[in-house]
Length: 335
Ligand code: PHE
Image (cartoon, rainbow, N blue to C red):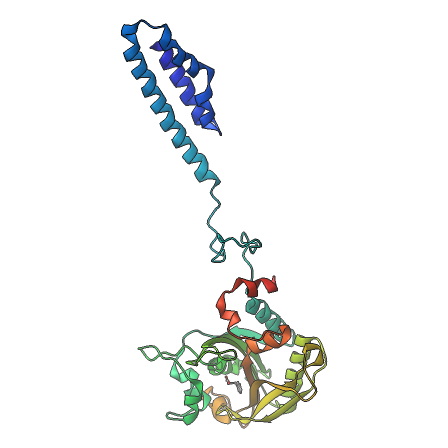
């Protein structure tokens, strides 16, 4: 029995330290214990056999435990950025250890970069706002029919997930007022997600991104605005572009314009194929007043448009819904 105990202690110690604990069952000492049974007098065989059996069960349990510990240690850490099909039979998974940026985030970074290099401050828009910022300070009085054009969602409390980044204009103007009065100018963009209660199709989404610009100074004019926009679009697409405007209506600008570029041949466009990119115009005097800025002294221009539209043209993406789809085949193209 003492020998059995020695062998037992020794094997348990080996199991606890081994990377392949099951191999311990092949140990010579254990085999020796088994074979011992034949050398014993018949009267002792029963008790001995029982002891050996218990030993086997004990070793088995210790091995299982050790294997479990080893297994747990080799399980990959949970990757919260992993795509939903991480465990599916897809050969070329994304490099999930690091995750990757959504193409819209990358493109928004590019856009912000271009404008900040032009001297614009970049301010993120809000995900929840109120009637005051979304409409009232933008010269939509109550019951203004243009409110219907924005298909806004509302929470039960009356808050609004904004339908355009213009919801930031009043804040930008108020925050910049001191700068104007010190002889400077306001130059800011606001960017972020916007929401509209729209029927979804290849060119409409309920959730999308906009980027908006606001510029105010003593002598701001439409020529400066068109120059700014041309310069942005030509930098973003890396080529000279033809631009045009036509009248457009937004309560917060006067005059209001729609700004279009000719689809470049390099991006599959034919001459005369115009793409409307954004709405813009001179900031309405009432909008300046709502921020405490005297429209007799200062003028401003503003523009705003969808980000997806820019990106779709750049990469020849035909369906807006890809962006919010989470489809790997789409996302992988931007790695
Ligand atoms: N907010 C307008 C829209 O979403 C675009 C716009 C912004 C127009 C600024 C004029 C000036 O349609």
